[in-house]
Image 1 (tube, rainbow over the protein chains, first blue to last red):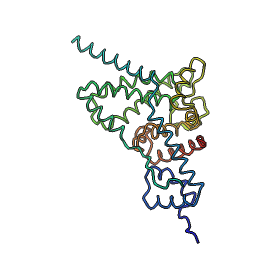
Image 2 (tube, each protein chain N blue to C red):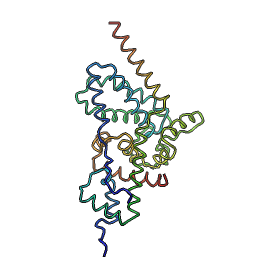
Image 3 (spheres, each protein chain N blue to C red):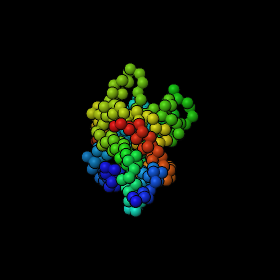
Image 4 (cartoon, helix red, strand yellow):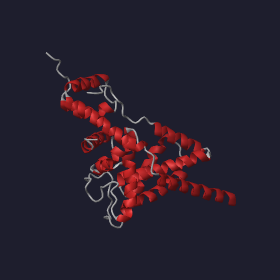
Length: 90
Length: 205
């Protein structure tokens, strides 16, 4: 007789974000992992969600387009030059 | 399951600490730190404008606003650790103000938290219409990727702002709650739904 999964598919679905964020206690993580070893659908869901989050994070790490960065630097240069000009007039 | 180990995807606060350090040094008169802070503030404004609000023509104004407010605020801030949430609140407010002023939009306030489906006229992030904006669109697609842009567009505005702040900008749940004025529990609920929708959209990636 195989060990009955402790977590149900519904349990996994409800707690998957907390699981991925590391917000669950170790025992709850163990339940989800045991369930996923026996349930390919839930295992795919966990892996898919992890990949999705990873893709989003890549955007956050990607440098902005060069033209945008150039304009940002130019604005800073102008602001600091204005500030220097005002300081010099005093 | 191919990977049974927990991967903690929570924000690590690294950017928050980096912002705080820049603010501290800038307030002491370190010019290089001030310049880096001002560039970072504009980058935040650009990403938020495009990914959450979806108006590239507004992004430049929102960047300018973030630049000037950061410059004025940085030397007076009492809690450098709170700078990052202040910045996102400032950028969010600037985006809201731009939307209110747009002549082709209703005069009433349109909240970024409003539960509008992504296919509504105000809820399409980074969807650029018109041939004059084609260059902007190409720029955005090269940066974000077409699939991810469309997946973001499919989210309700109230979920998109949470997903962008948490996953793309890397804010903690508590920081997102502070920026949006929602409870942490509400942020977690919306984030979970947003992630599930994004996964459906990106299923074959």
